[in-house]
Structures are given as C-alpha cells and as structure tokens.
Length: 90
Image (cartoon, rainbow, N blue to C red; front, side, top):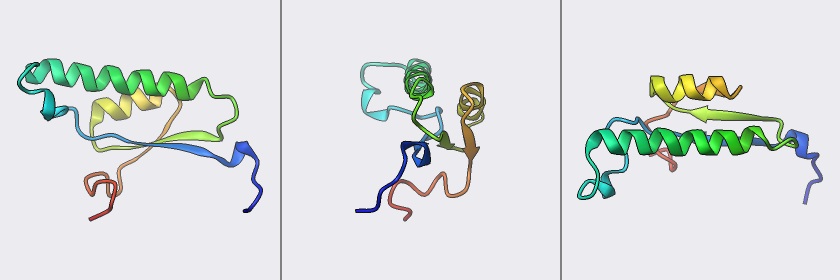
C-alpha cells in the first residue's frame, strides 16, 4: 500500500439537483420540504468536512446552482463535469 500524507486527501461530495431531491420521502414531505432537507444535509456535511484540518480540500460535483453557492461558502472547489452521470458514470 502506498504511503500518503493526509494533506493529499480530498473529500469529494456528489450532489444531485435539489429540485426533485429525496423522492423516497415524497409520501411524507412536500417537494419544498425535501429541497430544504437536501440543502440542510449538504450544509451539515460541508460544515463537518471544513472542520477536518487534515483534508487537502473539498470538491463538490454538482450542476445545482444553490448547491454550488453553498459549497463555495465553505471553500469547496465546485466542478460540474459529469455531475448527472451518477456514481457509476453510466
């Protein structure tokens, strides 16, 4: 196994568009409530990651403008290439 310094490690966070988020909760929450939930969850993740001193950085992969703005507030690098491809890239 190759040795690496923790400062070489980036946290990579894929973020779907908030519109239509959390579909499995549609019987319990309105579309607006699901959007707020998804945004709040992303903020919680970014807050936790930004407090991780040994990370080299945070990268957020998204096409959602609100997610991108939120990510930038936490100093994350935002990329949008293949953001709609899913975690398998298919």
